[in-house]
Image 1 (cartoon, rainbow, N blue to C red):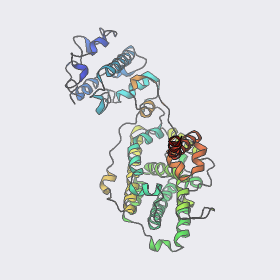
Image 2 (image 1 turned 90 degrees about the vertical axis):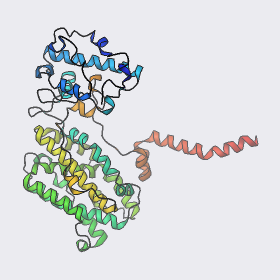
Image 3 (image 1 turned 120 degrees about the vertical axis):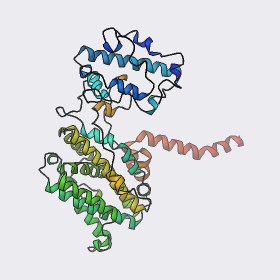
Image 4 (image 1 turned 90 degrees about the horizontal axis):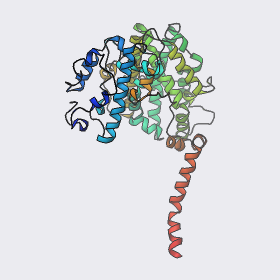
Length: 423
């Protein structure tokens, strides 16, 4: 996108010299003769200029590093004021042009996050939040998985028996393969601290559910489907050649099961009129986990403590995206909707260098200052209330009360009108 053309802020020429008046650029070689950005036409030109920035300019200890931070902070402040006067910036609407790399090879944002907030830049020598990186990188494909028609029908209680049996049989084959691989590599450096067979393994519970619905001979009528075979083959390939990447599939499946298990179990029990004892819904029960929220926090902490080198962390994130896509293919297959080609699922776009904690957590410009913490994901209030009213009332009492009040007013409104007319 052209930086100047069509930009209301540049109607009367470049507005930024006014902002630079408060910053001493006299000693900077880049500003010796003129502003290095005055010939910029496209956002890629900004990136090209920033890529020439010396590594010393990213150090929070150096004078030049502090000057760079002050420079961009002032530009942010001035840009925010311009936005109020001129409207939103058309350049930043397509992405921040400062998401580029310095000559050090690191992202400029990562370098400046370290200078501004003191957070660790993701490299091999420093700890990082792998859990937040995985969550951020898979956010889009996670949303896509939730929006597959089959999953929508499941959440709405429109679940057909044969579809559900196909789901749990597919998951049985996937978990059997995954859990065998995790057992075989239980002492792998990237897997051993996240090996929780008693707490997490699902093979036995899935088999119990299949026996409940279909009897002991369930496998004869529910062989692995084509998409299930593809998923199993990917896990087997990793177990053979890249066992560390099994971490991505464990993260994707187990934390997902823990997060939505209780709500889905209630839907399943209601739709198929299952006994209160829990038979038929064993897959969603984690009897050896007292508190799912605390366990997930512990799991994420152990992910972060792995301190994987950036190339491996990037590979795990890419594989986590593949895991979501392979699950999506199974959901599409069950719902008889168009199926994502296997080649597309396995060719998930490689992730870039993991972002710093602040850059991943905050959707705002890093030069605005401040950082946000991770928020524990929860189901939306209407979803909880519809499928488990008591849980909805317990977790959202104020919202429930307001909803009841609004419904009551809507119901009683005709009576009020009739009363006032008769008066």
